[in-house]
Image 1: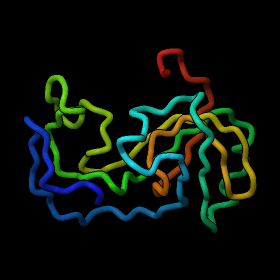
Image 2: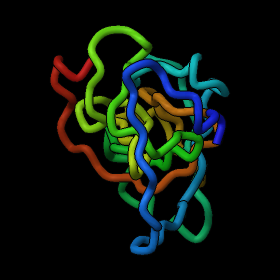
Image 3: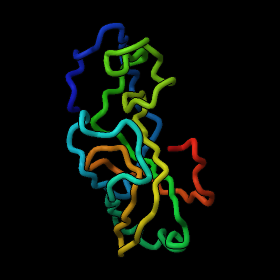
Image 4: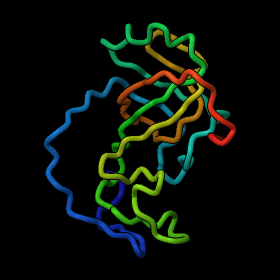
Length: 155
């Protein structure tokens, strides 16, 4: 993990993590973005943001069939560098502390990220997308179709 587990902001609360034993994930790919440090990563993806590459691993290539007809997809990814023990966070050391589930912070018990992205192109096992908010090298969990355009409130 990139952050020190003892590095807690004022008013934040951490807990001892229970033993993990109930789920197995299979990473189906890797996400490549311009951001290598959390401080540089946007707080939320922008559909007009930079093009990022989603690299799908074999044997999942055939699962892309039909995806080219879509304008938007949802990507689920594993925030592998996020700590998992905070239940109360102080976003940016500003404002009112809030519970983890009231925030889009990557710090979560199960650090799963979700982004609605604009699908720009598919080239073999590589998807070019806009709208991500994760670090370079983030493991990909799933791709889901998004059939309707995002509402203006999604920006």
